[in-house]
Amino acid sequence: MKAMVRRHWRLIALIATAIGLALLWHMYSLATSDPVVRQTTVAVDDPHGLLARPIRLALISDTHVSGPDMPPERLARIVASVNAQKPDIILLAGDYLGNDKPFGKRYAVAKAIAPFAGLRAPLGVLAVLGNHDYWNGAGPAVKQALRASGVTLLENQAVRLGPLAIGGVDDLINGKPDVSGTIKRARTLGGIPVIFAHEPDIFVIRRDFKPLMLAGHTHCGQVSLPWIGPLWLPSKVGAAYPCGRYDENGRTLIVTGGVGTSGLPIRLGVSPEFSIITLVPAAR
Image 1 (cartoon, rainbow, N blue to C red):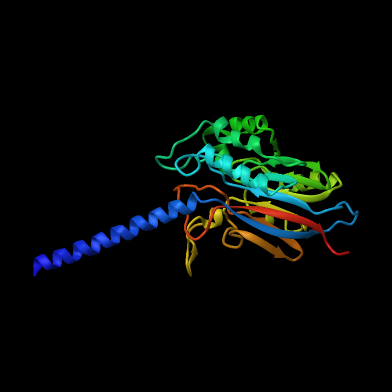
Image 2 (cartoon, rainbow, N blue to C red):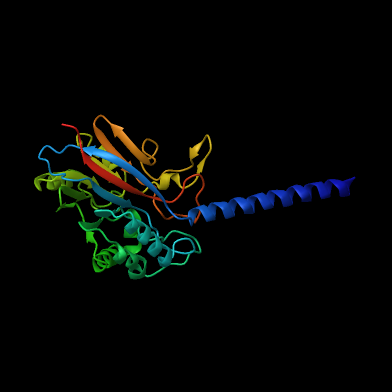
């Protein structure tokens, strides 16, 4: 009888182990799968008729380059996928380094950033920094590597690209953010203002700002269970804006779920993704 009970429990243990290994393999496979392209169209106020044609923005966030799930070679393939969408402007929303994965291979900052040199957008490629980009004093090296890759880094600055005035806010956690100053600088350029940052918290810092805001950081939770939702969201406003598009009182926030992983190289219930946002003039 005791032998039969032991065999019974060994069988249960084997089945549980097999299920656990299969689940881990599924989560790793999802984390390393090709990103989903999330497309949306946003009607923006254009009182001066600046949008002669629709403008396509590509929003990419949270590459977290490190092994085993995001070597530079995989990021290069993602760059090619972004280019295939033919965006007019590409926005990089931070967290380029994957320096928090236990036992994960780390790459030199220049090697982790280098694939961005392959990005192609006729109006330009812009970037802001995320909280991971400041860890262990990496900020200066990340800034240098972005510029060496032909990317324009915005630190509470704004630039005019075609009909748009795009402001990039420094990281809200480890940087020196100036949301109000960035908005003011974008507005003085005379184009249609768009503000982007790493964290979606910018949306609640300036509730009076009507134009488009863009962010990443949340990974859509990275692990999201049925009927429960994300197990953890690394943002003070993450529960309200985990990822996707939010339209509130004439305001629009888009939070992209990122292409990489943080902490562990796994995803569950949420695929890697980047966003393509098409801007069209609102009806007058």
